[in-house]
Amino acid sequence: MQTLFRKRSNIINIPLELKKTSVVELINNLIDDNLQFPGNIFVNFQGITDDSVISSIIYYLQNITNNTFYPSTTGSLTSLNMPVGEYGIIIQSKPDNYIVSPPNNQYLSENSKIIFNIGVSKTPVQSSTYNGNITVNRTDTYGIGGWQLNQINNNGNIIVSPNDGGESYNTSNTLSISNLPYGTYTLTYENVPGYISPITNPIIIDANNPSVTVNFAYTVDYSYGNKTGNITVNIIPNELDYVGFTLTNTDLQLTYYGHIANGDSNVTILDNNNNPVTLFPVGHWSIVFDPSATMTTSTYGYSQESTTVIYTLEDGSNNSLLLLPNQTISFNAQYTMSNQMS
Image 1 (cartoon, one colour):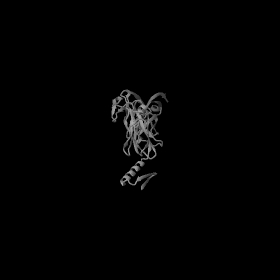
Image 2 (cartoon, helix red, strand yellow):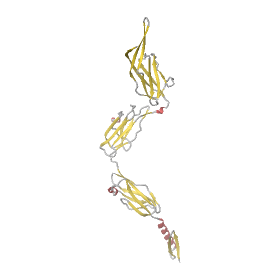
Image 3 (spheres, helix red, strand yellow):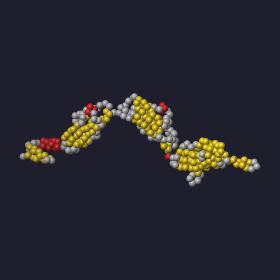
Image 4 (cartoon, helix red, strand yellow):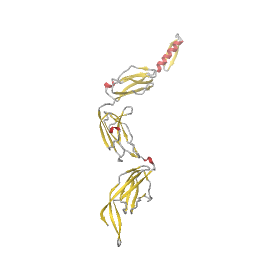
């Protein structure tokens, strides 16, 4: 008599005379074997096509699930009928001057395939010779602040300061620094009150990118909110009949109007609603004076006589000045007498 055991579509005939333990062992072995349903594994290379480099990369395949290591190999690989489980690629050796990146582990399911792509790239060339170039280009027009160019080592420490010995700031609007060793550099910007310094990012020069241009600009710090300062206007001579001027905050696009009249030492500044202004928002201010003015003088004899002399603007401070919180900036105008009289 025979005992019949069925597993999936397999029929196993077991002789009755076998011992019970032998029957169990036989069945277990058959079941274990049949659980290893096969799949296919492929290994390719990406990033390089040089066969001499690919053939010098030695790797081996590992079944992580059952801790099985397959023989080391080189080049592309096709492995068919592999047991299910988690697999990984382990790099055993590689050529110098190349970076080999093993792919992530993958799980091979029943009747499926997985593809491993090994990444290969050439190591960036590093040199101690001086053959790089960095151009620093300023794009704002404020005329404040400066910069330093420093080389950074692998630990993030400054090892070379090509300009000004690192002790002072370069104020050039455009400057090209040549003959720099390959490596990583950074621009350090001078801290200027009322301005936001440019963002500092690493600058890398190497054989693939030997020449780099960096554009930077300061911006006005508007975090002062509604803080204010004071503006004074001085006009010489102050005996002029009337001198008008326009004050403009170029950051806020805000304009005020002012004048001095009849030798009064007090300057009147009004907003668009003709309200007197005594405190001014921080920011950049510029001024434009009337191009000419008059001065009237009176003489007394048998009768009072008046003489009017025309003055022209010789020097007026119309450059932009930055007003900071609780500070004062001054604009000055110098008028000179012309030959015209009335």
